[in-house]
Length: 116
Image (cartoon, rainbow, N blue to C red):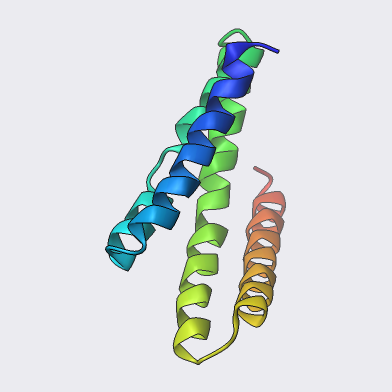
């Protein structure tokens, strides 16, 4: 196994541990750390290395990132709304993933309809 394959996993684990530790001090700081654009560059690095920096592959991957950001925003907003409504963790996640899936389906359907 190459270092490029292992390093992103190690960084991801480090971030999860930091969120767990930071949440004791500041929930807001832990949330900011959890949403920092860290996983995106690490995953881009994996794609870049796997394709030897082939421009088309990297462009396709980054386009997918753009497509995925809107459903993820709806996911996070739904988490916030369901937590304010008093839902427990499992229903919060279930509703949020359903919203994420619906928004992604709509987005992909619109993309297909527009011929993009």
